[in-house]
Image (cartoon, rainbow, N blue to C red; front, side, top):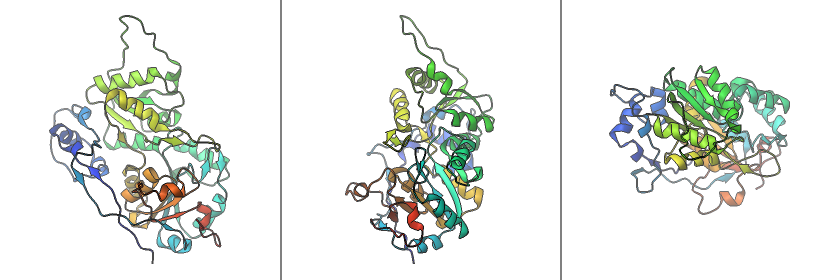
Length: 370
């Protein structure tokens, strides 16, 4: 039998201790309050956007913390067949697991075909917000993988889904610091937006007395990975968050690095989020991994028991923590960001259930030797 160890995680609750923050949460849907790990709330306030600016995700070490039991060290995957038979669904990260840049990782097609032949549901979750689900579908197709749009969940989609889940007002707009994927998902969700790649060429002419204007109807700023990031976007997003009452600050992810090519790691979406967080002195609400929002969404959409899911990823602080926060089995692959030395570092507190070299170790006669 495969045994589950218990997760180590600390959750700050000081962010929700103030009256304003509590009133803010009352205006979220039941899905949103569950996403934040809260019981159902009951209270009223005259303006559903009046208190949005007070929400802060506090990571101060002096805040009140909820403690959980420690997790044992990860085990090498010696019996992949047993893990396969113990779950119904596999959730795969994409960058560093399925591909690196535009190059498919060895053995991926055969592995996915084998899992499908055993009746396993496959879902692909990525923190990369540059593409919509439809655009990711085309990337899978280009790489020779048969994956449907319904099996793909990108953080661009998560941002739009989250806004829909809290009944984001139709008369409000979203300012986007990010790429085309976020714009397309917002459009599909029927949410007004501005910004995105077209603001990448805009410059600010600093001169005495210059005052930069911004749209007072912006009710949320969504920040994702952005290759067209510039000072104009930082200032515009900052003005919206600071000066528009109740404006939300949403991040698709806080990944430090990403795989734009297979040759090296590149600065990730977390660098853009960090710039806006620094200028606003606000912490964002993160909808991508390791937030449980996408996990809850997937479980509800497909009717999946979380105990019957195995999360497979290459990052400890996003993929593995995502699976642990959702109550799933977890498998770390060493084909992406994380190395064996990083996993076994005494300072690393995030331990998956199992680890292996790459997902093709699922194939017969390819048990991990790591």
